Image (cartoon, rainbow, N blue to C red; front, top):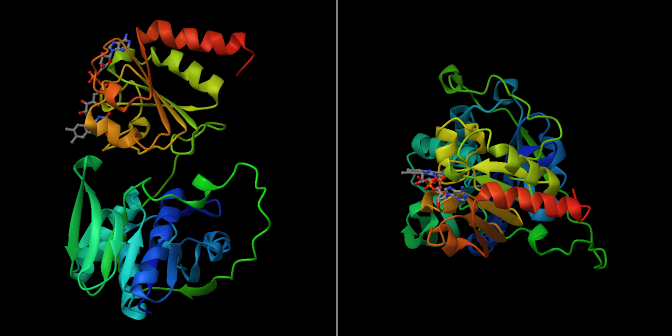
Amino acid sequence: MSGVLVFVEHAAGVADRLSREALVLADSLAASAGGSVEAVLFGSDAAEAVSALGAQGVATAHVVEDGRLEAYAPAAWGAAIAELIDARSPAAVVAGGSDRGQEVLAHVAARTGRPLVTNVVAAIAGTPWRLTRQRWAGSLLEDAELRADVALLTVAPHVVAVDEDTAPATPAAPATPAAPATAVNRIAPRVEARDLVARVTGREAPVAGSISLTDAKVVVGGGRGVGSAEGFGELEELAGLLGGAVGGSRVVTSAGWRPHSDQIGQTGLRIAPDLYIACGISGAIQHIVGCKAAKRILAINTDPDSPIMAAADYAVIGDLHQVVPAISAEIRRRGGG
Ligand SMILES: Cc1cc2nc3c(=O)[nH]c(=O)nc-3n(C[C@H](O)[C@H](O)[C@H](O)COP(=O)(O)OP(=O)(O)OC[C@H]3O[C@@H](n4cnc5c(N)ncnc54)[C@H](O)[C@@H]3O)c2cc1C
């Protein structure tokens, strides 16, 4: 094949955002590596997601059909991709910078004895490959060389722009010609029982109607300054009025004020909303790495010298317990929410 193989994660028939970022990088890599872009997807509902991949330059999609691999099983998914590498001989395998992307490619690397390069922002194929990657929670960029027969790469989250970032909100452009269809290759890889020891056995559905932190256009984040679990009621109210979601710093998840799934940062979620409202958050680098892809940051903090000010586009210096309810009241007064 000598092209690029992309591990595509999907939900409800749609490739997820970080996988689409990986597809964009893969497309440019295929230009320098030669060959086409192929994808590998898991799950019985993968076929639906495949239908949109032609527009993203995917020539062939390998759909893994094995009931045992339906639910996430990192070692087994890695084994399936390793088998596909043997069959297709791609120049590179690329995954999005999600927890799963990193974990599955780590399994592929360990299983095949190849190096894995994470958090890549740019790459040029060759001998050696020339790569630029994020280090230290995105606070510095490293230029690196990679010598490998197959380059295993994950893409730094929210650095590569996807079409929806540049497309106008209401498409006025003339219709583009239909994208070529993606060929589907159904595969059933060899799976050993030991590869299925760690696997997802159940899922908890989010509260009906709630907006996920990674999809929300507005995120209201709370830190130690919120003071208690109850204090988040004011943030919930503001997020509700703005149609957004609530997240927090590690201090608040460690204190049990919010579940770990709400944590934003290096060891939590990386979000990219249009607006991030950081309330009572100091702006430690480990937090900033999770929110720096926001288009705008509004900081509400009593300390004008807190590090969050360096990342903020707007700031209100004051007690969040006065400022946040005041913003909510003003939105209501203007008939919003
Ligand atoms: C390996 C590692 C990984 C980490 N991963 C993460 C991560 O993923 N996410 C993360 O967030 N952190 C992470 N951390 C922790 C990080 O270093 C900080 O300790 C943490 O982000 C601080 O949280 P905070 O801003 O809520 O609290 P603090 O740093 O204590 O800041 C509280 C802020 O609230 C302000 N404040 C106080 N009262 C009020 C008020 N009434 N109104 C307005 N402002 C007020 C204060 O001025 C201060 O700026 C990690 C650390 C390590 C070492």
